[in-house]
Length: 114
Figure 1: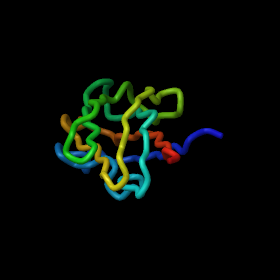
Figure 2: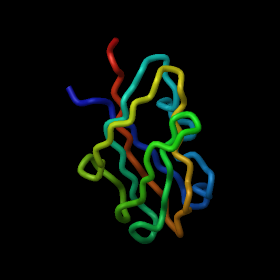
Figure 3: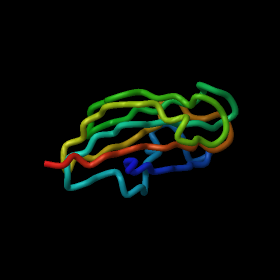
């Protein structure tokens, strides 16, 4: 069975610098240890014009850019291995805002069985 993948979509006017692209998503916190095994963002008017940092708590884990325009599918998700301890929040704040058009993404998170 494939791990859960969560999609998000944020209007360009909302995705200003500092805005958390995962705002309102249920995956931000959990009471179990987790691993982020994939992440991809797309959208805006041009490839590479939007940048976001994946944070675990206050620590930057990876920086991602929109790979191209349009909406992502699982082929657009890049593999990652980011361990998230139970109770630690994850956020995806915008570092370089999109020029136009929504930003969409997919994050894949697996619970770690203890």
